[in-house]
Image (tube, rainbow, N blue to C red; front, side, top):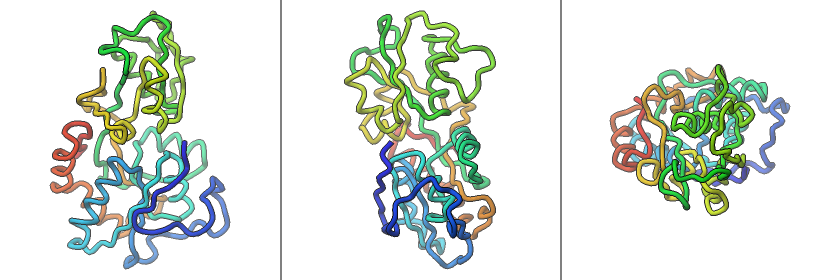
Length: 277
């Protein structure tokens, strides 16, 4: 993953963010000054776009000053929240957050009633028009972070390409495949690299936000895509534990789940991103 950041309204203080989550002085409480701007980390598409829409159209009326900081990976937004470099983030689903907290000893939590949208995971290919056309021994690229890799494998299983071992949950890897009739080969890559891998593999399972950034639509270009029904992968606003009641966070949570944002999602993404409220 690239740990570079595009700052849309402010510049990070000198010194790169690291995973030294216990660094001295990094635990400042983001809710200590209710009049300060609320700094929110997000991946660019669609989260950054949704936040920018709120900043430009809704925040002022709600009495909220919003700063959006865009990152192109799935690690730095959580690191920044834990260290107090930002007040909140908006980029992840619950299985990913649970895994991140477990592996890194962090205490980041979902803000209540602030699940905003689902980005359907899809299978894409430049060489075939349907999954059944994949040849034996074909190479399929997968996201290499734990929960999204399991999610990708479950999508392949739901469409008949593989079978996973009984009881496998959100930590499934290719080692948990019980049946693989086509003898598919799996290439594990950082999620952000998957769209660029399409010319090198027979198919790739790509996260919705990275598909959108590459002008790929789950609704139009994916061979198959996840159904939003009973889907646990909705993206939400998250903060360091203890900051859920920050008045600024509560204001943003209400705006993120407002009728105006729902209409923005429906109009802009045409099914590639689905409102979850």
